[in-house]
Length: 208
Length: 208
Figure 1 (cartoon, chains in turn red, brown):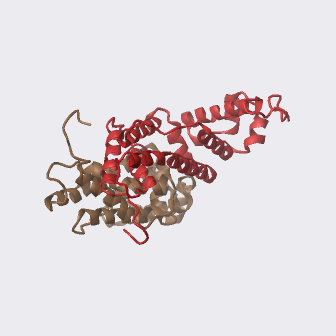
Figure 2: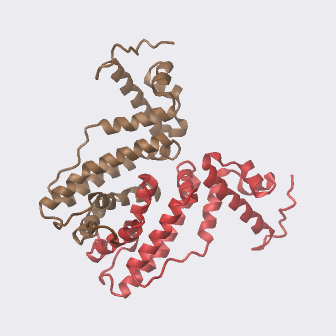
Figure 3: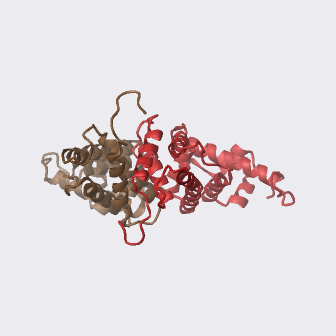
């Protein structure tokens, strides 16, 4: 079968290939948020996207392939970490963004986490995306050191970022707590206070 | 159908009813850890437990019922929070226990979290169990205040406990990082330093 929408002669960015991908991935996000990964099917995505089923099979192969591509697409977005002028403000803004993504109903982010327990390739793609995002956020810590908000000693930026953001995921995803509008700021503050007290300083091999 | 192992005349704790429950829940834990909730079935559990299928259906109704009961059973264990003589030591010990439960292969704890994304009743049971365990751990904070390790001002014990433990869940469950033997202690230390700096102090209504 051939798909009239799919031509290999038109693969430039923004071209027909890119438009089909955008439609398919929009459909994956919508289906995933509404029905979860258990309700995700190649047929359902093709129908929702208005794209020939054969195209979806040829390009994405299976549901795992769709999930990986939707995660990869998230990584392609020109996301920038917040820049509010203070570490506390930056981490609070970051946490607010995380909280919003987790409490919106239906949440694509939560559906993706659930899916990652079942699709090893999707789990790897998600881990990579998170690794990249945390790496992007290290600039927040570098700026804070430059501004003198943190001790000049080297701070392990990733540990600080994990400490600042982990309570959001723990409360909202695993503990299923009601969203607390103060949590983004409080979790950010706790991490900044811990960092200022040297909690995330790099202390060489064999330290504790 | 009747099950010769199941007699309503023998429901005392430690009796036949309790023994059947223990065998069935052992089977649920083993199946869940080995095959995940997607591989969990009433038939598989009955076979593994050596209990008549009709008994399993009658008493637990469905896979969701098995999951809820296995979580409830975890809550019935006489678990005691650590008591090492310091808040840092207690939180480190708690985190080591959490880390072990998450990195053991196969992990019953991780399988249960995955299942909770799909079984609403299991999710509620798990939330209740976690709520109870965090409540039990508040004694760690109370002892620390008595020992003068934390400022006398009231510290929100649950927030401190979440901050101390969340990085373990975030790193090991969601980010799928390799276990870091230093993480239990480092996450505990960061929370203690933040607490000592007043991060989790209760500051009345409308504060930030």
